[in-house]
Length: 205
Image (cartoon, rainbow, N blue to C red):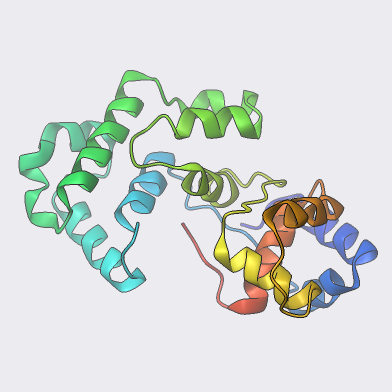
């Protein structure tokens, strides 16, 4: 389901930025969608790190099949021995168990996240082994549907801005940060549209 702010966001972006207006018109009717389950989304993001989408899906299927259900409790019960045949590296297995422990202990509690601003939630997530800022930002955009996340370290976002606004000329990170201010408070929406300008198929995490 497209977020309830999407129509307002795209209208405001289109009204102030001709480049955005063209993308809004091109991708009318589609937008962000959340998988819903916080633990599953983060587990999937860890599994997918540094491997192809196809390989990640294969590992995810084996990981899911090794568990009665994809929950923190099931991962902790399986342990490293129970996950050994899933195609996970030893390090990713450790990351998934650490993630499960954070959820099981309440250190990560999705019911409390609505009260946290973006930076506070990112700080909680990066406390988990295997989750860096980029992964946390993807989670805020794709699972939490936060409207104003601007993942400056994302290479696709950088490329799209360079191509659409700077004639392909690369810009320093600080310039991109300043440039993105024009899209507040809808930088997640602008980012999604810019990603689509490179790849028309919507991405899910």
